[in-house]
Length: 163
Image (cartoon, rainbow, N blue to C red; front, side, top):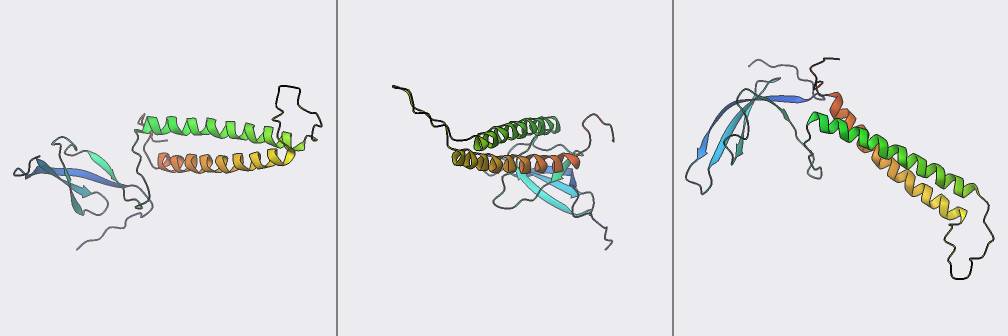
C-alpha cells in the first residue's frame, strides 16, 4: 500500500465521490455519501436525510472536534465579518478598561449625595475590580478573534486571489 505524507496541522479536504439511497425501508429515506480524503486517498461514508445534502465532485473540509466544542459553520465572508466585529468589541473593551483605570486613579470624592439622589460613583477599589473584569472579557474576545483568524488563514481567498 502506498502512503502519502499528510500535514496534520493543515485543513483536511474531502471530495464527495458518490451517493446512493442507503435504506428505503425506513420511514424517512437515508442517503449515503461516500467521501474520498484527498491527501490520503482514504474513504468514509456520511449519512443524511436529504438527497442533495452534498454534491458529487465538490470539495468539503473534514472537521473533527472535541466533545465539548460546538462547531460553528460560516461562509468565508461571514467569518471575515465576525472577525471585524470582534476587533470592534476588543476596541470597546480597551476603551472601557482605560476609563476604569482612570477612575481607579482619581481620589475618592468626599461628597455626600444630594437629598433625594444616590451617589453611585465607585470607589477606586471598585474601578480596579471593574477593570479586572473588563480585562478578562477582553482576553476572551481576543482569544475568540484569534481562533477565527487561524481558521481564516487556512482558507483560500474567496475572491480567488492566492495571496
